[in-house]
Image 1 (cartoon, rainbow, N blue to C red):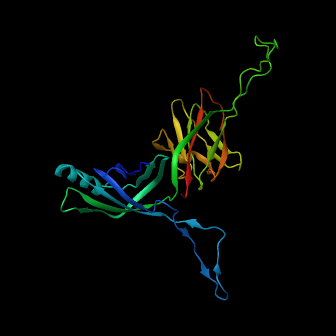
Image 2 (image 1 turned 90 degrees about the horizontal axis):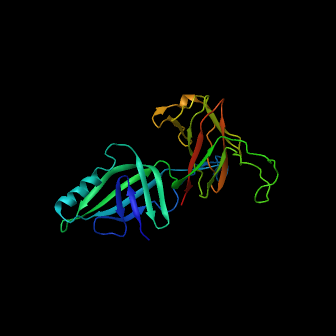
Image 3 (image 1 turned 45 degrees about the horizontal axis):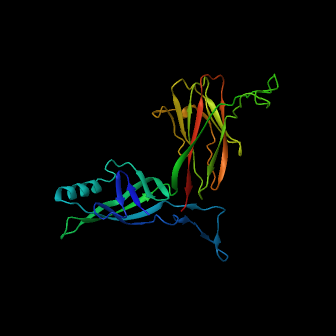
Length: 285
């Protein structure tokens, strides 16, 4: 089973000992710690509990080896590792094996990216600590797409057909998708809507009735992206459009469950408006 550890742009191979080798990633297996805040009962045994507790950030400690074939190569390896998060921006970290890839979406370096050279060989041991703000590990995103609801055909006359079967015309479209999450943690979808929608649109979770409404034209060739986890809303991936979201009941895909998302137009539409809902499997694995 091949294990690749991707730390931002760097890839370490748990099997290959010739270049970038991954030796250990503590904190990857198992769950992040639960925040159990207990307040002692002043006049009785035990403590006051809570109806629900939440997970803390996930702490990781990485240890690897850099081995170059010559001094210049070794120096390049060390410089690249020392430059982890050089721009200060948190980055994704993932582990890949024969069963697939699981990722932490946003981690930050804590302290230094330490490099300990081997005085006898061209090589070095490297260590670093990371903190994952979102402790959930995610699988690959799965997209689900639909257009607006449209009617289908009906029973057409002449009732017969060359095959001898009745013909009911073209199938309709309900304008909805069912999004599943087989993991053990709730996940939040990303929705991309394309025009033409003259007055905007709204999305509804049919199981809960929650609505996300966008009151602005979506012109031809333009898209609106809504990140249900962060609440970010972008037009064409660039311009902030969150002010046009007039109802923001962002909803998750529950652990081990599914939701049905209905795509609705506000006002007139033309062309082929589409909604694509992308959601990964997520868990505390």
